[in-house]
Length: 498
Ligand SMILES: [Ca+2]
Ligand SMILES: [Ca+2]
Image (cartoon, rainbow, N blue to C red):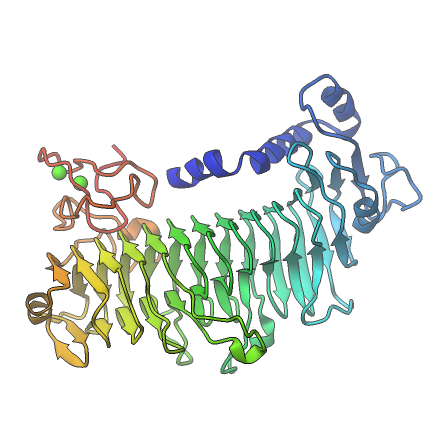
């Protein structure tokens, strides 16, 4: 996905530098590395340690005489050091208290293609603790290629700034899979997180469940290319005080309460994600989950006297949302909260069981829904209980059930598309037409592609159009070769792939 690659280039030079050195490490054996490094290949890599289940913490930590525990390595690393952990099961709570620097990160990584497993079975981990913890002050730490499983608390919690957690498999935790707390610039890249938030495994709780992948009171966190699925809470959450965070290129599906949740967060960018529900029959009122939800839940009762409703300035674009209860949803939990200066644009939402878009109350302002494809399956396309502060511009609506005009619930009135479009001055230039997607029943992104005669082609407005589509191809394109090069409505720019 090109938007993802651009993101790496622009925002992740330090982390990807560390990854490049990790790639080098994979290519050569550990004893060879030090001389390669001292030969100038990598300027700032320090010592290399190896951990193996059959080693000993009394060893020097070399390939021939490895440490036995990750904990031992974590106690001795200096900035620039690399720890390679061999395959096998490590039954230890790991605390990373020593980090690196921008020029010299500390890296803990799987040795070659082996799979080190940090397994908490039988270990006491409190509900607000984690099996793996990156402590505050342990900055510039890279953790790559581990499986982390069986925690009676969270699996991984990150308090250190600019940490990178990548290529990890995280499963079977009672609470969060990965939670970033009070940290800046953390990146979670290419992890798989499933079957966490097990404290709600019965899926009967009325509230209080955690999220599989979450940022809380943190800034400039990015969640990129992760696969987050089958969790018993929220999928990805930007939670209270999570500001300027990015949710990019993830696959998020079959999570219980909400797939992507922006709760008391500010200035989130949610882009190029594939969000869906696989099933066609459902077991509870939250099943299937919402695609992207925004709210400001009231946590003042938790004793936070400074709490105020704060959600605003989110950009949610180029996402594909399939077979969810609602595609995009806001609900007003406390008076004064609302969608404020948010943009929901160029998303393709297909097959919603409840509403394509639902905005429930809210003191909304300056928020724009533009250039989205919204295809419901319930006959109920859109619901806005309190019009005002929301504009709808160049959206393409349709319903799979054969409804001729859809149902647009607007300030308590049930309107068909034509009445809705003609009555409100906040609504401009939307269409009611079959978007002619390549496979509207699909759960894959390809199914949301336009076909040649789609009315979405060249029908978008260029104001605020992102320069790429979901796949990262340039927008606008003249994919249908009619000499009109305008943006297409939805997440796909037809023919842009050339
Ligand atoms: Ca076009
Ligand atoms: Ca064209």
